Image (cartoon, rainbow, N blue to C red):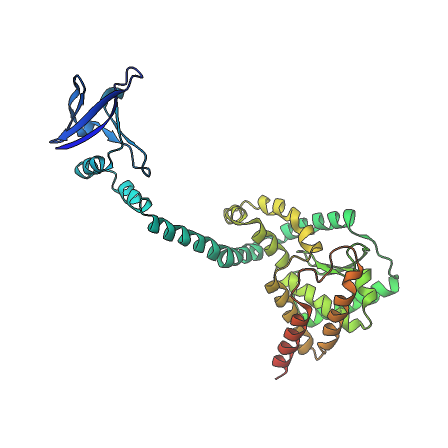
Length: 345
């Protein structure tokens, strides 16, 4: 016989009765201080609340009556004889052991870290590469409107200078062959941002007057343009937005709700202005530029020289610079040098 002390509520009033529960032969009896309160109730007619830590549990009886007890051993015995709630018993056995709880918590933390570090970037890349061109165009238009309203002024470069650089840009594109993007080079003045260049998802590359004026050789600008083309080809802007938005945007995108992408892309101007590409994305763009320069017989050194000059001039500008969150400049220069040497061999 299984016996447990507890409190009995008859389901008709709020009065609590001190009582004992007895279980034998698949039947329950509730006995109070003055005699039986409930007799011969089949166990199959009752339900037992699942365990929750060390809190008391209730046996719910026919007619709304309830017997509540903290006698875990007695209730576990009833649970076993009943043959139900196996999963909840398993969960309770885990949560009642602090070492198991600690290991489980560590496992959850590890899973979240692995998912955020590896799974989200992979899924973000798949989504960014599968978006239709119309989404890229709409996001780029909105981003350009925001940048023009808050950060840019009309270019002060001469038409001869801008046309010359656009022709040079066209020549670089021809060396790359056919592409899914329609590239365009735009110029803006920005005393706040300073020397910088941006690549929009549609293929538009924006270069500031300050960056152009800082160059001493157009081959330096070639490296910057190729770097930005690398960002476009690898969809770095959209991948950054998707990764930053996290798992909810991934779920919405994978389910086909592309409107969520457009909403999240409202943060793209901030990503571009604050140079918030990851180091991995910057290295990919650098390597694309270096590989293209080497393949076309052009030196990588002008691009390296320009990076050094940018790092010295960037502090003169009050806003974010092209180098604000990029990898350390000497590290980038060394990687460019090593990569270009490897390609020449």
